[in-house]
Every structure is written in structure tokens, then in C-alpha cells.
Length: 109
Length: 193
Image (cartoon, rainbow over all chains, first blue to last red):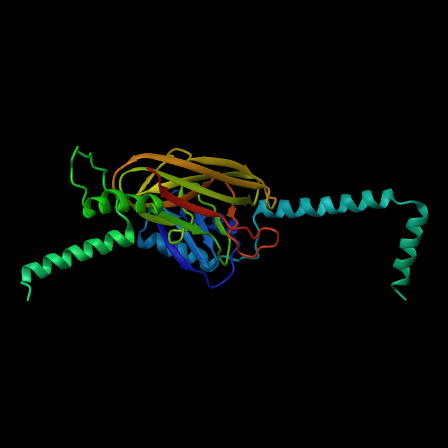
């Protein structure tokens, strides 16, 4: 197993970069390790061609793009929060709801 | 005036004594004979130096306190930190004890495995020494091990802590100031017999 060591100059989304590298490199790709700004790309091949693909993939990488798993996880969190809000609202008495609504309306004055 | 050969002999003896004094050297204890003259030299090498060696055995230790946590997506064993979590000791030959503890998390619940590489060969082999299904929650999952390696040859040996994941991204908290997860793992090796 070989390693390419890269001193990162921009932030990365490790999960997305892992997905990008796996797609670009195929079977020779082993995974990524990150510690601070030091990124290690684990590979079964250390040819110049592989190094070129690693660098090109890193340049093309956008840390703001999320993996499907990350999007799902985010949506799950939002759904959970929304359910929690519903549960809390339903647990209130009518008087408590009136107080909250009144404060809410006053906030527009 | 002393001759050149005498000077070299004395210099060699002095260097050997200094090395023994500062590093501690194990000498297999001699079998004493009835009526044998006990000299200072014998007492020093067979009693004092051996006691010094036992008091301060070959030890390697790293207390983790880094600027960032360690992460990996590697599904094959790789070094966690080839510089700091790599310990070299020079042994007298015998048993070595290896220890580690640390707190982990995963980006999506999955398994993290640990192993130790000694001089290029993994001690556990296969899926390593220990593995744990780790959750996404901070400070929920801790792994530790104490591993006894027996009948090791005398000489210099390098131990590296390695890990791999079954999938997703594994994190080892490294005292990096992360809220509620600013904990400090420790990795050590020590000759014990």
C-alpha cells in the first residue's frame, strides 16, 4: 500500500472526496486519512498517472457538495426537529398556546 | 605518559560505562561459584546495571494532544500517525507489552478496527486486535487494549498503531479542543521480561 501526502490548501468534505476518489481511481484506491491539513491518499499504485488523477480529483472537489448519505442524514435531522416541535406544541394547554401566540404577534409590532 | 593503545582501551571502557549508565543494559545474571571473589565490576554489571534496567525498562510512549482529530475512510489497515503513534524501543529480548486507549466516532454508525504494526508486520493480522461498532455520537464509544507480545528477539523494534473502517469515516478524538470530546488517547510499549 502506498500513500500520497498532500498539504491541504482548502477545506474538504472527507466523505464526498472519498466518494470522488473511489469513482476516479477504481480498484487501486484504498481510502483517505486526514489529520489537520495533512491528507493521506492510500493507494495500491504509485504511478504518475495515479498521482495525476488524485491531484485532478482534489482540484475538482467542492467541499460544499454533500454525499447522498449526508443529505439523507440532514433531512432526517430536520424531520426529527419538526416532529419534536409538533410534540411540544401538542403538549401545551390552550392557555399556554394563547400566551405564545400573543408574544409571537407582539414581535411584529 | 600512556601509550596510544592504552589510551584507546581506556577511552572504549569509558564510553561503554557511559552508555551503560545512561541507557541501562541487561546482562544475563551469572551463576556464582563457591569461594568466588566478588569484584566491583561483577557487582556493577550483574547487580547494579540489571537493577537499573529493571527500574527503567525500554519504553516508548505517546500522549496524544493534537491540533486536529484523526480521521480515515481507509478499508485497509493504515498508520493513524506515522510520526507520533510510531514508537521505537531497543529490547534485550523477551516479552513486550503494548497498550492503547482512545475515543472514537463514525460519520454513519459502522465498525472501526485497530491493529499494531511491528517492523512491517501486523501483530493481530486479519481484522486486527480489536474492533467496535461505533456510533455517530460524541464520546459514546471507547476502545482500549493491552497486548502481550512474547519471545521477541533482542534489538530495535518499531511499533505503529494502525486502523481501518468497515465503511464511512472513522474519527479518533485527539485532544484537539473539540467541544465535549477534548480527550487524550495514549499509546505505549514497554519491555516487560
